[in-house]
Length: 540
Ligand code: G4P
Image (cartoon, rainbow, N blue to C red):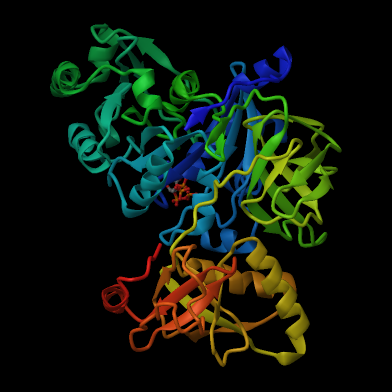
């Protein structure tokens, strides 16, 4: 890839604004403490203080990014949003990712819009299934990972064992920035390896205030008093051992995705959160450019460009509006600016960009590369669209996912057909699931595919809540999808000279929502049969 030079850079003031942006997401297995850590970071960033609502758990939830009833009922975050706050001259954009045992495409798309990720791990459990999947996505995208080992106030696994697991499973060099002094009832604080000082832990009630922090050298009497003799000995031995076991932290290696800084703490007790935030902001990268047609578009390029990574309809059921979330890749957004949607070629005026904070909104006049724009209104964008103020930039940031679950979602009451159609059309635009048009199918509706069954539940719940349409799921006979290479001609072609497609029993030809040809198969075994019988064809 050739790196383009910036012929028309942004102004010095804009360059400064861009350089102080830090855009990241917190990822975790459900229950590891992502929501709690998010709340605490907002507390330090003053964002919750401004909203004036950290008084009870109930109110805390209403300020967080969970706004759908289903999320509240199930305690999961189905939709994602962005929260912006200032900290130490950084402008921090924190993107919320849904956390659930089933993963969804939505989470992956959000990760395309960030420059770093904080992975929360439950100290009692270590790496869990969901963390691993999310980690894989980050690694494939080259997103640097910072690890927060949470819940040290509860019985945890031995920290050296956790370190070993992180290294073996994630295959990244671990670099513990601090080290825990005990765990559970015996948790006394952390040792900051760089500063060579101990931060002593004090329990706080409810954890809604910034934790008091007492700092001392490891030799200090206060530290010896706080730790029992055996714990003091264990900790000092471990701290010594670490110097031999781990390599020194190097920012360049962190940013290259080779090394992961690790922090221990307790989000609920506000312990270790501020230190982690400060250290993270020092190391986390400023906005990265994105590639268009083999060339890197740098954030400091004068012309505005960005891509749509999320669409959320009906955020406020009373207004029936849509929010389109755009990651700004380059330049500066100004209210009312005109851009071209590179997919449709249409000019669009970006009139109504807003800053969202849960249910609250504020009109946004200016935003910079690295920021997330939330456009609210009736914009006709699709996920993956590139918007630019100058032509010839197209980002291909949206990963295509191979669905693992298939179903039909059928309207129960024909009287609602119009609402069913408009709901499905809207929710498909949001990318809630993928639609497949099966050749020769007797079903009147397209088959749907998703990476996890949660996506179907969300679709059904939203059809009821937002469109008043009851649906039922109908079984699909297929469980595997195989795309043809885009250069392969129409597989249904009648041309006698063209090589035929030999389909295994029970399979079918279909088109995905972008018009690409696929084969639907009943099992992984049948996928092998398809490949064996068609080695004259290329598949993707
Ligand atoms: P998630 O978003 O990753 O799913 O996790 P969340 O923050 O909701 O935390 C899951 C549970 O773990 C919550 O308890 C939360 O209070 C608790 N938790 C988070 N951080 C810590 C910590 O540092 N120490 C301890 N001991 N617990 C922690 P819950 O019982 O599910 O909810 P709640 O009754 O506290 O609201």
